[in-house]
Length: 260
Length: 255
Figure: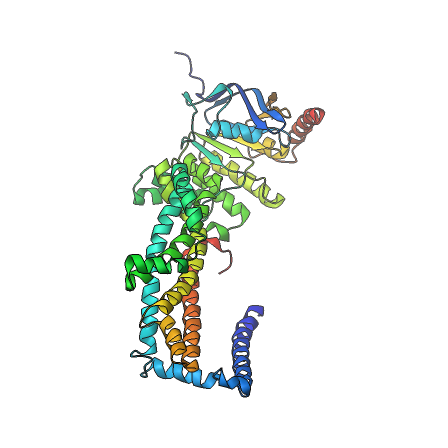
């Protein structure tokens, strides 16, 4: 009963709070502020219009979103794969940890956007440079979490597995890897939002499509509606990404939750 | 040729074990001796932190003795291995595997083909009364059911020796009685040599062929009782209560 009430109450509150926010925004820009800030109607209108037919620059909104998403996914997946491998190896093997952890500790606090100038000089202005930056954003977060996950595997699991006859090589894949999954997922989640932030920065510096470009082009043309439309799209896509991510996580980590 | 006696399976000879603590060396086990025959059910009974778990850890091969040696089936124990199944106090199921996944893990490590290991695991899942829960994750099971999986997992590798470290210590009283009965039933249908650690005297008298009473830290054998009451035993039988009083008295004196 209580759960049912909650499932009705939550979407209603969501609708009310979003609607109230839009009303406030609409009323707020009526006066003097309206010269610097468009209201919600033109922004939502532009978003929908450019989504189906109209263009910003030479492309529709959906193409801009796809450009940004493909860049994010390429860098994210590459970084995640490398991060899981390095992180688990560091947590599992003392020698690997001793060799890589000092380097990693220095590289990790550098925000990916700090690499923008050097990536342009090294790699140029093309897609590779953007993917490299996103790779860094993903790689550092995932490595850190995979490392701590593998390092903090409950010692009793190892003992139980050895008692059951597992050799050292099987321990890595049958115990350390699955036991690290929740920690790796926490890293993947942080990495995803970090990658989403990085792609926008990379597109704002140099590109001719993508959501970051929409914002920066809007600023150059003094088009406030376009800027706000870009920001709205960034928020919506980010929200969708994390919703999809949570679904995948619930599926893969279902052993870790007592409810559901 | 004389009638062969039951084969001796475990032998601990003059085992000593200490740990380094900030205050210096802490001796946990002193001059510990134990001989266990095939299919014998032995309870190690002693007060709280007397080093019972350390004895299990030594026989399991999780730790090595400072002095003395431990032989299982004539071979020196140097590392954990599947001929010594352990049932842990905190159960320690692999939470990312289902009941079936946990029970068949040992067979998988031994390279038993899938079909065969499924059948064998199923046999032990049935034995502990968990049919229908094969695809359930441990997080959804109650404490008693989890420990059933723990027992099935250790039984499934068909070890020569079962080491049980206060397996029912974390369960509530009701479940604990039930699990004692269950364990007795399981043991009677699949005989094994069992070393069972407990700090509950009723549990020890109910289950054991032989009770080894340990002194407080450092643990050493204080006294041995052979329990030859017929099974299944009754907690309220006069012989049971007399034994209980006798053993409780000598333990109280050492505290």
